[in-house]
Image (cartoon, rainbow, N blue to C red; front, side, top):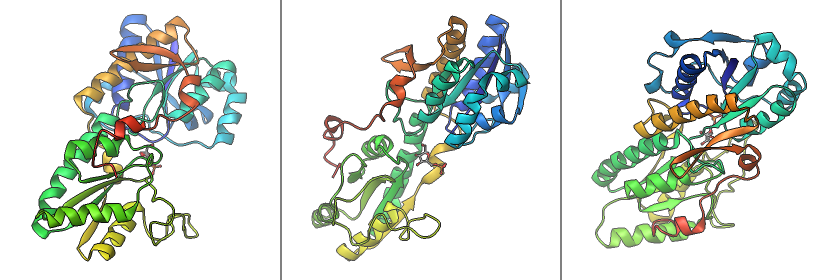
Length: 341
Ligand code: F6P
C-alpha cells in the first residue's frame, strides 16, 4: 500500500518517533511505501509530499519537533479538502493516510474517511487533554521540563526571598501544571478546572513566610482563571492584536501578588520550551507503539479510528470518542494535592 503520514497542529516531542515507527513497520513488514506529507493538511491540499524511507528516519527517535513540518489549518480549508479528498489523495498517490494530531486532526480523520480518503488517527498533545486515551505522548516530556524549571526556580527564589509565579502550558486543562506542580513541590497550583481566589493564594504565601519559609513557588496554568471579581485587572482585556493587555495570567498574578503582599514576585513564562527538545524514554516508547499500531490499523481497514492507550494496551478507538469533549482534570484528582488552591 502507499500510506501517507502527516503531522498536524502544534508540535510535540515524539512526533518524529511515530514517523520513524510507521516507516519501519510499513516498509519492513508490509512492503508498504510511505509518503511524508509536508506541513499537515496544508501539504495534502497543496500536493507537497515526498517518499520517505529508512535513511530519512535515521536518528528520528530522539529528535524533537517534526521533520515533516506542521501547521494549524483553518476549518474552511479542511472542509474544502474533505470535499476533494479522493482527488487530493490521487495527486500524491496515496491509498490511506495516518494523521498524527490533536482533537481537530482526529475529527478531520473521520470526515476524510467518510469522503473516500481512508484515515487512521494518532493522538498527540503535550496538554494530555484528549479523551479516550489514558495519555498522549509529549505530555511526559513537558512535565519533565516544567518540573525541572520549578526545581531550578526554588534556589533563586530562596536566595532572594521572592515569590516566583511560573506559568505553564494548558489552555483548557491543568494536567501539566498539576503534575509538574506536584512533582516539583510547588506551594500553590492553579488550574483552569478550579477558578482561584487571589486572596487565598496571598494568605497561603503569608502564612508560609510567617512560618519562617523564605520563598514561595506558584505554578499556574496559562488557562487558569480567577474567580469572578477576585483580581483587579479584567482577565479578558485584549489589545487590537488580540493580546491580553496585562500579559498572561502568570504576569498578572505576579504583579498583583507583589502589590498585595509587599514582597518581590517574579513571573516566569515557560511557554514553548515545554514543547521543544528530545522526548523522554516514556514518550519515545508510546510514540513508537502508536506508529506500529497505526500501520496495523491501516492494514486492518480500521479507518476513522485512532490509537489509544488504555491501561497497558493500545486499542483502536472510533475518533468520535476523542472529539466529543476534552479530558479535564477531575475534582478527585486535584483534591489529592493541598497545593491546589
Ligand atoms: O495544545 C498545545 C499547546 O502547546 C497549548 O498548551 C498551548 O496553549 C498552545 O499549544 C500554543 O499554541 P501555539 O504554538 O500556536 O502558540
